[in-house]
Image (cartoon, rainbow, N blue to C red):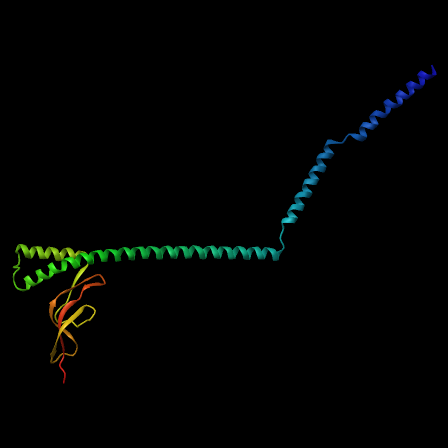
Length: 206
C-alpha cells in the first residue's frame, strides 16, 4: 500500500513538471516575427551603408562617365563625317565616270562635227536644209550633256583651251589674241576633250 502511494506521488510530480518543460522549449510566434523583422531591417541598413560612396569616389565616377560620353559623342561625329565624305566621293566618282564615258563618245563623233562645221562655213548647209537640221540636233544633244565649244575670235589666248598653230604679229595688239579659229575645241564640264586650233595675233616687235 505504501508502495502504491509512493508511485502515485511520483507520477503526480512528473505530470506537474510537463507543463513547465513545454513552456521553456516552445517559442512565441509574435516574438519570432519581431526578431525576423529586426534582422531584415538591420540587413537593409547594412546594405545601404555599403553602397554609399564618399564624395571623392563619386567625383571619380562622374568624371569617368563624362569622359565616356565625350568619347562616344566624338566617335559619332567622326562616323558622321566619314559617311558624308564617303557619299561625296561616290558622287564625285560617279560624275567622273559619266564624264569619261561621254568624252570617249565625243572623241568618236568630233570628226563628224568638224565636217559639219566646215560645210556650214563654206555655205554647204543652207539654213533649213535637212543637213542643217541634223547638225543643229547633234549640237543640241551634246550641249544637254554639258558639251561646250571652244575657240572664239577676239578672245584672249589661253594655252589651257587653245592650241596655237600660227602667230600673226599685229600692230596695236597688247596681249595675245585669237585671230582665227582653224578648228574648234570642245570641253565637257571641266575636262577639255580637245583644244581649239587657232591663229594668234601677237604684239608686233619694235
